[in-house]
Amino acid sequence: MSSTINISDAIALLGLSLIFLICRFVYNGIVNPLNKVPGPWYARWTTLGLKLSTLSGRRIHYVHALHQQYGPYVRLSPTEIAVNDAEGFKQVHSCTKPWDKSRWYEVMVQQKKPVFFSMAESGPHGIRRKMFARSFGKSYIRNHWEAKVAHMVNFAIDRFHDEAEGEGVADVLKWLTFMASDISAHLMFGESFHTLETGVKSHFIEVLEKVLMGNVIGSELPILRIIGKRLPIKAVQDVFNPYRLIWQYAQEAVKTMRVRVEKRNIFAEIMARVEKSEQLDDDDVTCEALGLIIAGTDTTAITMTYFIYAVLSQPQIQKSLEAEASNLPEDYSDADIEKLPLINAAIQETLRLYGATNGMLPRMVPAEGAYMSGYYIPGGTTAITQSYSLHRDANVFPDPEKFILERWLPGTTGRYRITNTARSVYSPFGAGSRTCLGIHMAYMAMRYGAAAFLRKCPGATLAPSATAECMEQQNYFLTMPAGHKCEVVL
Image (cartoon, rainbow, N blue to C red):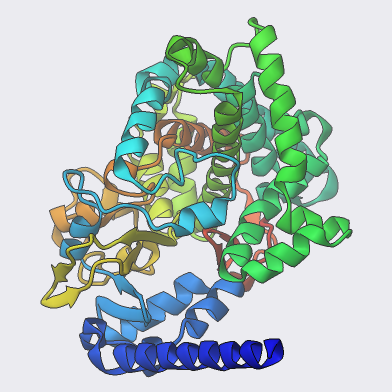
C-alpha cells in the first residue's frame, strides 16, 4: 500500500512538474511581453547562450555583438534584457528613482553579511554609503592619504623600472597589482601586504586574483561551487572557497586595527564615528574591507595597465604625454597632475575603452513594470547595461574603437566633441547612486601612476608578447587582459 501511494505521489508530482514546464514554455514562447524585444530566437527559452559566454569570460563581447545585430534593446534570456541607449540608461540608473540591484550580486559575492557593494535595495545601501562617504571624499583622501599613495606608486614604478633594466623586460600588470593591493590593504587595515618590497605574490594575493572568477562561475553554475568547496584540492579551494583564507587574514587585521591605534586607516576612522550607535560590528567591517580590497586592487591595476598599453601603442601620443609630464615640478601633487590636459584626457579615454568595470550592471525592473523605448518590460525582469557597449556607440562616440585624446580636451569642437549624451552614458565607475565609492582614490592612484611612469620610463615600448590577443579584454565581472600580463621593454 505504501509503495502504491509513493508511486502515485511521484506520478502526480511528475505530472505537475510537466504541466509547469509546458506552461512556462508557452508563456516564454507566446505570451511573455519580452517577446517583442528583439534578440536571438533561443533567448525566449534558455539562458544557455548567456551562461556559456559568461563562463568563458566573453560576456561583454557576446552582449556587444547582440547589440550590433539587434539594436539598443536586446533580449538575452527568458527574464533578462540588455539596454544600450542614453534614455534607457538614465531610466535604469536614475538617481531619484533608482532600480534595485539584481540579487545576482548577493549570489556572486557570497559574503557572510550584506555588504555595501552587493546590497540590492536602495534604502539600506544609501544608509551604508552615507556612513562611508566622508572617508572616501576627494578632499579627505588628499588630506589624509595622498603622501602614502604617492610613495607607493613611485616605489612600484621604480621596482618595475629596475626589473625591466635588469631582465630586459618586465610585466607592468604584476607591479601595478602589487602596488594597488598594498595601497588598498594599508588604507583598509593600516598594514600593507608588502608585496612591493618582496616582489613576490603571497598566497593571499593569488587567492584574491581568483575570487571574482570563482564567484562568477559559482553564480552561474552553483553546483560547481558546492562541489568545489568540498574537494580537498588547494587549487580548486582557492577558486570556489576563497574566503576560507582571506576571511581569516581579515579578521586578524581587524583585531589589530582595534588595538593598534597608531595604525591609522579608513575603517578605524569609520568605526570611531559609528561605534556608539553600534551600526557596524567586526564582521561588517571585515566584509566591507575585503570587498573594497578586492575591488580596489584589480580595478586600479588593470586600468593603469591598459593606460600604458594604449599610450605605448601610439608613439606620437606617448611623446606628447612624456613632454607634458616632464614639466611637472619635482615635488608635484595630485592637484598638479589634475591640471594636465593630455594626461587626464588619456586617462579618460582609457576608462572609456578599457575600464575594468565595463561589464554588466544588472538591475531589477520595479514590480509595476516599465516602458522602455516603446517596449513593455514586466516587473521582476533583469535589465542590464554595460559600459563596454555604451562607450562604443558610434552615434555617441565617433570612431569608437580609436584611442582619441581630443574627445576630452578642453575646447574640442567638431565630431569628437563630447556631447551631453556622451557624458550621460560615460560610466566607467558605475552610475547613479551606485557610483563606485572609491572613485576619488582610483583617480588619484591613476594620475600618480601615469605621471610616474611617463617621467621614469621615457621611450618605453611594448614587448613582442603584448599582442592584441594578449590584451583582449577577458570578462569575469571585472575585465582584464586575457594573457594576464602586459610586458614592457625600456
